[in-house]
Image: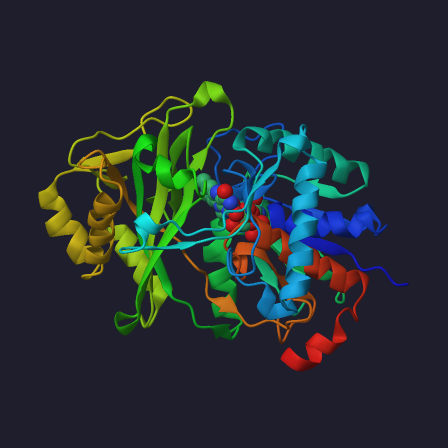
Amino acid sequence: MKRDKIVIVGGGVAGISAATKLVDNNYPGELITIIDMGKDPYNRKPEEVMTGMLGAGGWSDGKLTYHTAIGGQLSKYCGDKKAMELMDQVITNFKRFHPKPEEVQCSDPHEEPEFIKPYFGLRLFPVWHVGTDYLSEIAKNWYDYLVSKGVQFMWEAKVENIDFQRNELTYSYYDHQVKYYNTKFGDKIIFAVGKSGIDFAQQLAQDYKLPDEPKSVQIGCRYEAPQEHFQKLIDVSYDFKLYRKFDDEGVSLRSFCTNNNAAFVAVEETYGDHSYNGHAKKDEAYRNNMTNFGILMEIKGIEDPFTWSREVVNKLQSNNTGLYYSPSRTPSTTSEGNGVSVTQIGLDTLTHVVEPAMEGYFKYVWDFIQDMKKVFPTLGDDWGIYIPEVKYLSPEVKVNYKNLSLIDYPNIHFVGDALSARGITVSGAQGIMVAESILQPTEFPEFIENFN
Ligand SMILES: Cc1cc2nc3c(=O)[nH]c(=O)nc-3n(C[C@H](O)[C@H](O)[C@H](O)COP(=O)(O)OP(=O)(O)OC[C@H]3O[C@@H](n4cnc5c(N)ncnc54)[C@H](O)[C@@H]3O)c2cc1C
């Protein structure tokens, strides 16, 4: 069988899951090159949140969501059954490279508790917990495996352009030297640049006029409070997801990515602006008894959601950081013991800067917070918010559902957050799906006929 050279742009979970599936099935590793602008797992520092081996997922909270309704698009390409099977493969890989696989536990809540019902719904779905503290070890084991299989890695090399017609990549090393990577026409490129490559994906989409699918805005803040206030709900669901919907107004809200016990707020820097996220440490030494989660609004009907979100985020900056509001608290420290990079503001700024910047939508977040006080009566003023938290959903380019390749460029495959994923499991699953299509081009044909 003819074997193509495969260039994977991005060594995040999507890219390396694709490579792993290939070499696990005897695809020659020597034909696979992974190019990443970050560092290998032995040199990547914890503060390099977004780039390097295992990508943004590499130093994240390691919560592997396990449901087709969570984490972005997967079933729409391959159906629910196949989606679950692909997610199983991702979770198996995390266990396989985990130094203590027996510690990977699944939480699977079933009952929606009565006390939240008047104000919120609760989304119930299983989550596998890997633990942030183990992710760097996992990354090293995973990397060593791929290297042992002959996979080539190019670190600190930023791909600047891809010529789709000539199948040629332009990249620059950290020393800014520009080089070309020539692939033959017919060779494959897996584009897996995640969120840190979102502007690059956007640029390519514009240059090649790639058709895309409509997306909604996802914006809000990261909420933080002592864990004791939420314990009653955490006992039911560790990674709880509260939600509410205002169908007539095109807005829904959900709590997102809940961290407990040793919970820290992390700064994400995109386009030079700060936004916030969170992660948890598993090691007891880091315990701070805090809970944090995003309060994210999904807003429909905004014409250019990407530009709108970027402009809002830019308006929510002060002193080159995002904003922090609390009626009683001060910002927390990071897991490294430094203050979270943020500017504290008062109610006045919340009213006169944050509300207008969010064009009236902040009231939904505010009401969510006020209603949480009713559901968790000890909360009172004992909370703070880091503004903004944002999910820049890159315009989802239209792809062939059978193998996630671009409609007009069948050798270029988009995967992970660069396509339509929003989390580790779905990103990895999309990478594996592409690898399977390369190994076995005719997989699940009956589904393709129906959906493509
Ligand atoms: C702090 C934090 C906590 C998170 N916690 C969770 C969680 O608990 N559970 C969950 O499911 N998800 C979580 N996420 C989201 C999750 O990390 C992402 O959804 C996932 O990593 C996406 O995988 P990916 O491979 O598509 O992209 P990424 O992991 O973002 O990897 C993309 C890679 O591409 C490289 N790259 C980008 N542009 C270029 C370029 N031009 N040239 C070369 N290389 C490039 C980057 O260096 C990066 O390594 C978290 C994210 C953050 C930031």
